[in-house]
Length: 70
Image 1 (cartoon, rainbow, N blue to C red):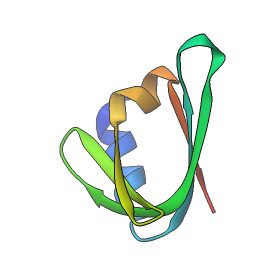
Image 2: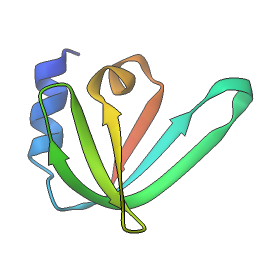
Image 3: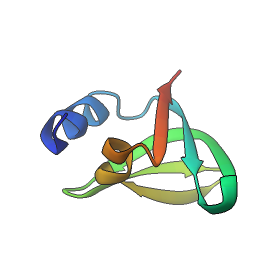
Image 4: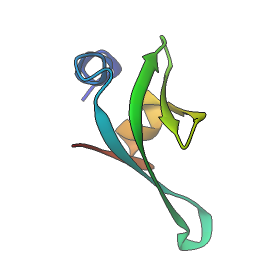
């Protein structure tokens, strides 16, 4: 899986609902349910409870985050 395929997949789902699961240190897991807002060359952002949260495509490729399209 390369970054261009991930970017295309995310760009094709702009303005749709998503759940982003972030796997952090010490087995901490955060879930954000929001709307896919914008894409940039290296990151994408969602609107979560009125706040913009950004994530990198590389985090998705390495498995640090998971994206579920609703």
